[in-house]
Image: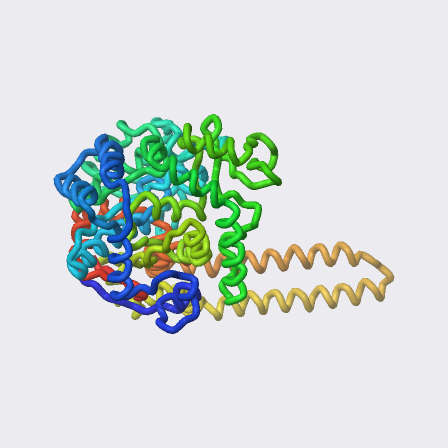
Length: 538
């Protein structure tokens, strides 16, 4: 296994500027990402008070059903005794969702270990399962490679209701069929049978999307002590009761601050990632399993259609007596994390960085400070087969990521075409057109008018000549199908759908090839949070 670092063209200006020491984007955050910031943040957290015993108890009760490794127990004990946390999170995607979900967990674990050594304090890794999210269409599918092209594979069950991932029950027959199809696409390796059985065993004891996600993540990371909590876990909601009350009490200040900050962000040239409005309550109300986004209308909190409607006092009562009926959105979720967990740093992707850039006034509205934002690791895995093909065609991983492979493929196809045969077809077409002109002139002189019929015939013959040329091209291409398919495989593996591998494929595609030791191998590499893109040649 080899590790390389590459630099890619800037695709996210905000992230690129975040890595710059001098960029004005840092005014939107409480900290830059550097060693001094971690020292300052650790001192700040040391002055804060958290109900650590209850937090550890809630996490323990949540994780118990998935199996508690000695490392998890150790980290829970450390959290209870004063440890701070590096936190990252993700929606509950099938088969853990895209690779970047796993890369977030790896970033959380490595950054926690690194800062524990540097700061000489206990730092634990914690993964926040966004089980309260209700967009099931975002988490119910994955992609595989079939015949050297990217294929979307989805879980067939659909729901018209906006139920949370933590309460959306799985149709296990449909989910097993989905898993069977995905693993068939992967192909048989020495790891397939045990891996497939392992996934089905976790499915068997899971009732919802979130449970299935957490079971798989725990299986992959428990030996590294990754703590997990589902945002929608009822005991955690109970623990959040007083904090929901704070969000409601300061609701107007939070929304007004975010709107101002987003306007400033737009003026700085970074757009409006949230589309915030002053009327946003930034909370959901959960009714009969569905989430309804609340907004303020006059003195009322309502979903806009009046299906749910509360005064501020009534909503505060809900927060006090039934907090499980409330749920956070992109604005209040980071605030809730800050109030419930001693967050040293939050690990997120480019999209999360954009909306975190709007949140500094929201933190300040409730007397809090933003934690350090740590961009997650960016990793691409290159198999030995693909590495060989890259060398064979004198291409690099960067070439593939910049979509140069498709251009090289087209150049190759053009180079192998039988230009003489195609020219002969064009000559035949040209001669026929001349004959039509001669016939047309003769008929006009004779006083015969069948222009429409002649035009129709000309179109027909044009189509035939075009068809003939395409068949010649197809025939030639077929002779070189092996080489052309190699270009397709390179693109599909490294830049699926013209994007990053980590945003398309789930980790089981690579666990099936290399075995579950892949996670251990990645965690043993000298990976550090940085602006570079890592290439792992396995």
